[in-house]
Length: 317
Image (cartoon, helix red, strand yellow):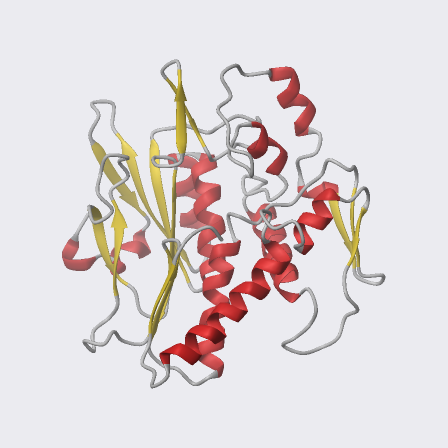
């Protein structure tokens, strides 16, 4: 996943637990990592018409289960966000230089962008539940679960711990977090929301939140971007325009019961912008949002949904 993970959990055998977690993450990577040539998702992206999935059977070890969990959840959130979360945006992400081959696009080619947009949209991908064949409408259609797979990895580890009867844990992959029970201090887990400034230290926090039995995922353009001729190009691409989305919304943090939901909604919110994102999250059940945005005078301000206030530590804003 190109990042680090951190686990806090009571155990008498940390090495065995780490091996079990590492094996699980390897299995997930084998199915959904777009940087891995042998992964199922990469082979699908390189195919002409699509790929057959393994034969369906019931059980925790169902073939392609990691891919399918990401696929079905991504499709659902695509529909709930009116296409603002779109896992078929990979051709545009690659064009703007945020894919496998990093580059800076110095001149916007609108004709090229328009030509790539024909491959974007979940209507271009279809799962035949009878034949177990995942098809696409054209060879250029690709899937990218980068905005949901880290959250899924967090959830998968949590489910592993739950099956092993663990009641207190903290799981974090690349900044996406899910917790259960209490910390070693027998207190609710405390998680920081970073200050969205590229010059800020990683320990510079805009807020701290209490997080027990919940997940938190954040998204922002303030670190992963490049600048050409005074213009900033961020890694969040609007699937409807094909252009990097740069608004006054600096970062979005989403609270949800599971991390893959929080992860996906955080990305959708960055595409939508402050007001539309706030409206969406306010109307979505069991999801809350904390938004940091820039004022015209250069200062930062925050806005959060009604339910998010309960998570804020010591009345922080």
